[in-house]
Amino acid sequence: MAHMMTNNAVKPVAHIKLSSRAQSAKALRVKPAKGAKSFKCATVAGSFMEGTEQAPPDPILGVSDAFKASTSPDKLNLGVGAYRTEELQPYVLEVVKKAEAIMMEKAENKEYLPIDGLPAFKKCTAELLLGADSSIIAENKIATLQSLSGTGSLRIGAAYINAWLPGKTVYLSNPTWGNHKNIFADAGVEWKMYRYFDPETVGLDFAGMMEDIKGAPDGSIIVLHGCAHNPTGVDPTKEQWEEIASLCQEKGHLPFFDVAYQGFASGSLEEDAFAPRMFAEKGLEFLCSQSYSKNLGLYGERVGAINAVVNDAAVATRVASQMKRQARAMYSNPPVHGARIVSEVVGDEDMFNEWKAEMEMMSGRIKSVRGKLYDYLCEKMPEKDWSFVTRQIGMFSFTGLTPAQVENMTNKWEVYMTKDGRISLAGLSAAKAEYLADAIVDSIKNA
Ligand SMILES: Cc1ncc(COP(=O)(O)O)c(C=O)c1O
Picture 1 (cartoon, rainbow, N blue to C red):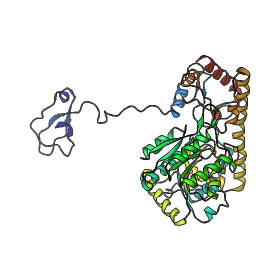
Picture 2: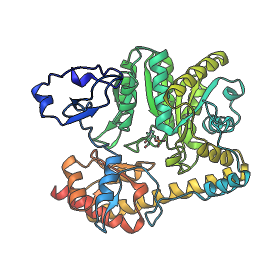
Picture 3: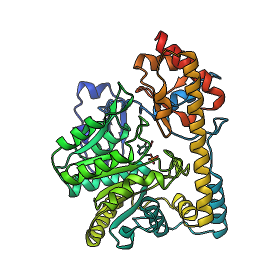
Picture 4: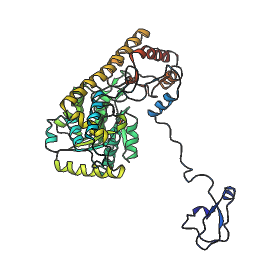
């Protein structure tokens, strides 16, 4: 069989019988084996990877590609959850620039980090999650591994579940950030959904959520957005969080917090850690991924962590060892630059306070454009109740626009957004709020 040949496998042969498909392929001269006469054999028509199917564009990052391709001066990218200035430009935090200047002076080397990351970063990130005075940290009942931002941290958590909690089903909110499904599915973990959003009230379906969490088999894994739920912008109240914690405790469920927007819900880093801190105080064990993409604007640096809060320091040590094993096989060790930035900022009181002020500024700008959008929508379509716009929190607004209406937003108005009707208000300026309101009202009335 001509197509199975490698250089080592070439045997001196007199002739090769070609199939009709191979006969039509271009002939190729192959270096003959020692002592053999030169001869021709055939290449295979098509590629070894011929059977690969085209993957669909990513529902969120694909929107950014379409936005870039547009030449319209009106175009607005409300797809990806990335903070923009009032001039709609990417923003590098002042405190990040300061940290980088300090790092330049230190001129540290670029050696590999340990598999589980920069020790100073691990300390800071656990403290940011649970509070510097947390008894869990003092008693070493937490395993922390620096990983590739929120996504990579979730992926390590999913790999850990697959290896060490086999057969467990993960429950995701309906709806959720689209990548959650990919992450757990690719790690070989079964996922199902629990009710979360009520389109009627454009708010939380708390009764449905509790019923589904109660209905899940004891000892299931419940993924909870720590704050600023993506895509709905709808969070449980503190009282509801207490009830969720009690139910998880009663059912022996393992919560898995995804904390990707700490600081963006309320503007306060502490306030936004309410749910995981309260769960920890109640004595619940949980997993928790963290991301510094949004709150420190370190999107491309890929800095985050996966934490396991457990009730026994010896278990924490073993869990950490297994997470390290997973990371080693996937990417060996995490990048150093972003971890140093986080350590400089969180580890220094003045810098930390500066970060808090910038955090408030960013979340304040989003709240302000939210208010402007609400005012324009009420003015242009007073017959509709728009109160959900200001009730929702964080970067996003879940507009309730149908796929046809979303298509109108993009095709007619050049407003790029995800098909589920989510808009990122972090990508809106006060100057463009009226334009967006016009686009939404037109899409509702005419699409
Ligand atoms: C809910 C949620 N989790 C995790 C992430 C992960 O983001 P990253 O990998 O950039 O930190 C995102 C980003 O949009 C998100 O919305």
